[in-house]
Each structure stands twice: as structure tokens, then as C-alpha cells.
Length: 166
Image (cartoon, rainbow, N blue to C red; front, side, top):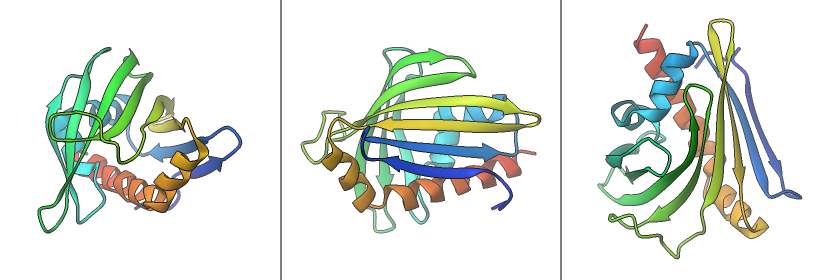
């Protein structure tokens, strides 16, 4: 990973939000594609040695992404992202939650709202993500499960993918 790229991860327990700001050495169009096309998402979303495997991706307002995080022993943890609003190559908002393989929400842990924004900084892109939780305990459970570490690893995978596309 290029260590000179911006990476901020801030937890605001008062507002029940996590803020992630991450710079990528690629133009917005390529970074946007990596967040919105299943063939690309599957290559970077999961922290190694896990893999992401998309079952369905309908990237449009009212659409969803249904995917499994597949572990090295073949274990699967399913999740779904329901897209609420999309402004192409600028931002999208969604609700992300754990589910079963059909997309039915799990009682395991409540989901979170995501607002993901893409901003050009010269030939680089800064992605700003705000995750919003209904309860502080939900935010804390996500952190206890290793969200910061796992998401950071996934973003590093995205660095590698973008570099390989050059």
C-alpha cells in the first residue's frame, strides 16, 4: 500500500457515526466503477484471506447488492446493501445489513446507513464514507467484530486492484 495516501477513520459515539476518508491513486471514474460493478467489488471488498462473492447486484436507486464474505474454510457470511440514492460518480447512500443467502435480514446485528462520496483531487480520488447506526451498541458491536481492521484491509485491496488496472 502507498503509505502517503490519506486514510482517516474516526468514531463519533455521540452521533453514532463512523467517518472514513480514504484517498486512491486513480481518477473518480475508475474508483466509482470499483464500488459499483460486481466483477470489481468481488476482487477487493473482503479482507484477505476472505473473498467477496456477489450473488446479485442491481446498482440503481431501489436496487441492492447481495453478497457473501467467504472464508478460507468455505464459511459464508451474507450481507445486503440496499441502494437509496445515487448521484453517478459523486455519491450513493445505502442501508447495509447482515442477512441470509436470500437477502432476508438477520437478527444477528442491526444494519447501518452508508453515505459514500467520491471527490476528485487532481488525478486522485478521495472517498468519504459516513456510517450511521441507530444505537451506540450497534456501532460498538461492529467495531468489536473488527470492522475497522477488515474495512482497512479491503481498502488496501482496492489500492492493489486500481494499481493493476494501470
